[in-house]
Length: 161
Image (tube, rainbow, N blue to C red; front, side, top):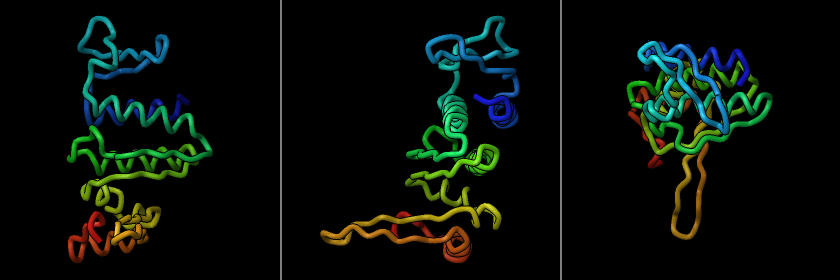
């Protein structure tokens, strides 16, 4: 993981999840240890919550895709609803920092709302609803600004267009 990405992820985890975390290091065979002020010896990252692990894995994913594309299925998986807006901001920050185009899937209305919360964030997003109508599969696109307006005006739910 590049230094800027790692520092960004560690700072995010400290601020939003666990202020005792100091660092996360790869020791061998994709095994990570968490340097934490609450432990005499660094425990495995696997001993921490799924949300923290998911955020760290997301950072690894972005770092490995510099200048490319990141695809994440169910972006809100293991992320507490109260953290979605901040996590969406982290995704945007990593995308900018590493020049990565991001494609996300979700069934979560809250996750969609988190990504279009501000006007600036909405301008960088687009949403697509995919539905089956009889034997046909239909995709309907919505620019982020339109998603934000629809959410504000009528509590629009992209999951059921």
